[in-house]
Structure formats: C-alpha cells, structure tokens
Length: 346
Image (cartoon, rainbow, N blue to C red):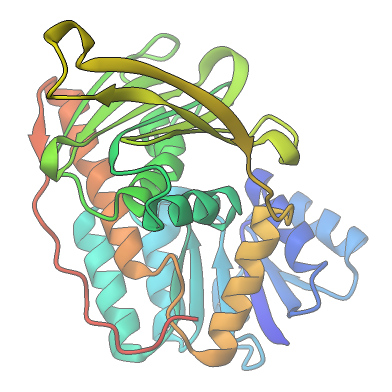
C-alpha cells in the first residue's frame, strides 16, 4: 500500500479524493488546499485523512511516498518540482506544465532523482484506447491515415486558460499514442465567443510524417456533450463514442474504398460497406485504473505509461498549437528526443 498526498480538492480534485480514498492499493494520508472550506468538507467526509494548507507540511511526512497534484495548471511545475526535490514520486494532472522548457526540466529532475513522474493523461487509462491501439498494431484496420477527435460541452469557462489547453491534452495524448509518432506541424483556428482573448472553440490540425493527419475539435460552446474519436485505416474504420454504454463504445466498421489499378478507370475504386463489430471492453473507471497504475509504479519505482516524455510531447503540441492560434498560421513542431529509459515500464 502506497502512502499518497493529494494537492487540490476542488472540482477535479474531488474526483481524485473519491478515487484515492476507495482503492486498497493506496493509503490517502493528506489533502492539501488553500481553501479551508474544502478542507473542512474533507475532514467531515474522511476523518482519518489529515488536511493542511501548507504544502511543506505534507512533504515532511516520510510515510507519504507519492503526491497527486490536481491544482490549477499554472501551479503544476512549481509544486511538482518541489515534491521531487523532497524525494516524492509525483503524478501531475494535465497539462504537465505550461511550457516545453519547464516540462523538460521537470522530467530531467525526475530522471536524475530516480523518482516516478507520471502525467494525468486520463484517456490513456480508458480501456478503449489500448484496445484500438491493439487493432492498429495487429494490422486489423490497416495503416492509419487519419484520426478525428471531437470533445465538446456547455462547459465551465476558465479565465486562466483557453479550451485548447483545457480540453485538447486528452485528445493530443490519444493521437500521439495511436499514431506512434510526433506531428511535424500544427495549425489551429479558434473563436473567442464569450470572453475576449480566451478561445472557447478551437480546431487543430496535426500533420504527421507520411501525409497522415489528425483533426482535434474542442469547444466549451456546445449544447451537447460530445466525446468522439474516429480512426480511419486502409482496411477498416473505428468509431469510439464515450457517451455510449460500454458494450457499444467502440465499433469497428468494415468500410472504406478498395482500389484495383488493373481494372477499367470507372471501376478502379469501389465502395466497401461491410459489417460493424463492437469491441468488448474492461469497464473499469479510467481514473481508478490511473490511480492503481501510479501506486504500482511507486511500489516498483517503474516508468509509467504516461511518463515525463509523454508529458513533454503533449505540452509541445499544446504550446505550438497555441502559437498557431495566436499567429493564425501553421507552426512547425521541433523534434524532441525522449530521455533514455533508466527504469523498466510498469
């Protein structure tokens, strides 16, 4: 059982509190927040958990091995760095940092200290994503040519970040995992519908080597909650709709266009419309799977699935996408060489 401290018990932090307090792999020892009213509720609902407004007090507890940072994004780098310097393993929510330079520094610090640095790319712990990845690796859907993601809601407007930084990390992490590569450039367009200078609707196009493309559409300005992913392979297409029941979340469509170069010109391309297969998925809540993975990595001092290198990659795409949003032009993304693995993956 791993001793854990939680930083931030607000809206998303409350989900972490519920999860960490409920799984046997974890002993949730501390909750830290600057809001005393939130801490009072923690003490009422979880009297065995210590609370504090002092991050230093939490870090002094030797029995707290790992820290989950679920505070506001601008605080991520400073808190995670201080925790690693104190000898703690760290899970930091997305985005890991707000600049690539900070992401690189944090990852190098964790590597030198041999501390676990894990990033809260939640959707990679949803059973649908490894299931789709297996289809790609096994060649079942052919070569991936295009991925489309749409994440929208009549959401809570933020004043410290736009919807690209808030929503897109989920889909960027999925796209990078499924493509197995970094994009070479990004082009973002958006609108500031409600608040001046804060985009609440953004469309991003990531260009990958080999002419592959990923399209990411995110919005706080939508009447319907949407969580969709489409993967277009040369053999089959995959549709993931997270708003559907587990038994229908991922469907594999035997559809596409078959080409016969030797046929007459008007017959060289034929439309294929085959069967639709629904994948059987593990219905474990992604946040539970993520928390268990962090606890396992602490026990083994192992490299997590969503490690610091994954965090750097996502922050780089976010950062260059934001530059594109501001400049209204396509921005090249420099190639990043991942840090050499010094530990085995969990």
